[in-house]
Length: 404
Image 1: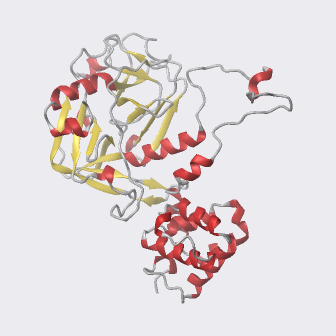
Image 2 (image 1 turned 120 degrees about the horizontal axis):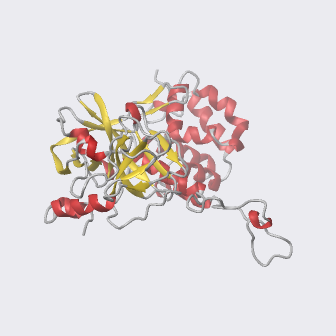
Image 3 (image 1 turned 120 degrees about the vertical axis):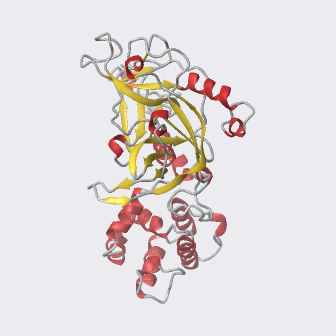
């Protein structure tokens, strides 16, 4: 007999299924509480009969959650809620023997956008006689020491990181991890030319590759093949000696490849079963071709697959970012490894500001680097997007990328 939460449809005559239903009715005794749980599990509230008595609403929620492949997410929401500790032990017994499956679902957990919107974005202190709120630092106990780093709103940071996580993919060619890419259109992926220039036989973009905290594989992810006509546009790179020179490359080479995938993955649902109804869509980034003023004090963040590992986040604050003399590359102290090539480089507001592609020492010790004489290097979007416009004018991809 299959485990109760994997049956489709759910069988409410089963003891464990019925027990789970009764636990939820006890834990969520009002319609509002039950609907909040459903929303955080990613269910479409419009598909639920919200005027049911709560005992019937809970059954409707469980049924719809299973139909949309979100029942595990719903159980994770309950088990992650410290306010529901009274039922945690009994609910845990109902999933005993399947802890790895539940843990894998937990890795994909994130609050609904509506719930995130209700969280406070900052803290202020009100005094009894204050006409307005004053910041905690107003007594001089704290101060801003790096204005460019600023502060990150936790709600926004969490949401933007979740977006980067599902829009970035590991590029595999012939079964071997070769680099990273990120979605910039419905079926368009941006990476480095040097990642794909040697051939793309058997090439796929693998999304959602994750491991558990202990290192156990949670999900191998979803592999989306390259299209037959995969190369939409590209620009070569310079020899290494030119790329890592103090001057950097002259204008004209941007080391990018715009790749067409076989599916419009950005407009599909997140997860291994994209056709599921009402699933949250993966989305993509828009390439901003406007000037950006890099500040060496600002943090820079990179999401990618260093050394082919499951997705990693690296950051440096301050990043020490500086342009090369020819202004066509930027260099920074954010960590990368082989396999990071093609990763998006974000500023603190999660705007994509560069395409990571290389690393190396400068020919002038102490310039663009720390005393170790090392840096990582990216390509600012300004010149890259200008080159894309030149190549794609009059072609469908021009409108797909919204370059007009």
